[in-house]
Image 1 (spheres, rainbow, N blue to C red):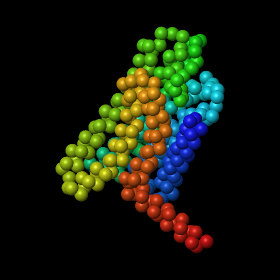
Image 2 (image 1 turned 30 degrees about the vertical axis):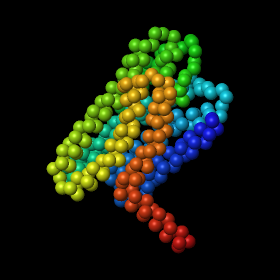
Image 3 (image 1 turned 135 degrees about the horizontal axis):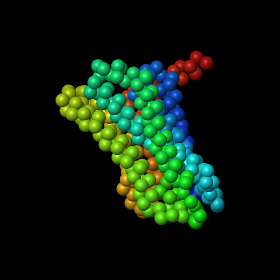
Image 4 (image 1 turned 180 degrees about the vertical axis):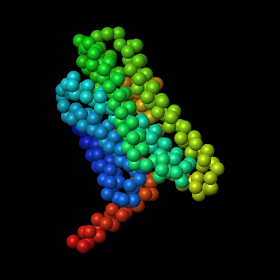
Length: 290
């Protein structure tokens, strides 16, 4: 069974890395995609690749190891980078929602509002908030005394699991740390609802053609938001405390969400589809000349 899981997750990880890198390369080399929307999409693909790479390779190697151990430093690094990437992605999804709002509700002012300097500033803000969130977690857990059992019943190290190993009454601290992550998740989710409320109101007043185009533009992003925030809310805001459910949510959060995001954008985005066709025709034409 573990060999089968190794093969499955190894293939999934290769797909995650290859498809996210493919989107990044496609946006960089195709001049038609040099716009704020795709600049943000490149950042999302990068964060997804990073988030999956922090946890999945270790999980894959553990399938073939009898002694499934990790160093204290390795465990702390997982916590740092998971919350860094995860917190950054939450804010980045809010920025992408704002981008859609400006594109649909203020199309004539889009190029002025979403200029390159502002996009870089918004992305830098998402990274900064992710880093501050991760460090707020690290400052607490690095000071905890560990003297008892050192076994974590999960696929990678997370704050709530590490706190349970501390030689103190960790219940209140665990609630506080979950509240820290939960507050970021809920705040970003509520802020996300604001631009989409304005978009829906604008769509109701627009023509049928414009409404269908606007909704198709937002469908991919809304799906990505649900896939990302769903597990986060159940892990940090409303924990179920059922071991197999927690493990499933952890795998979904770190493997299936980065796997599905590029597929969702490729299936619903006409510009991405057209860019893939242009790349294929250029590649085939180049081979034909050779």
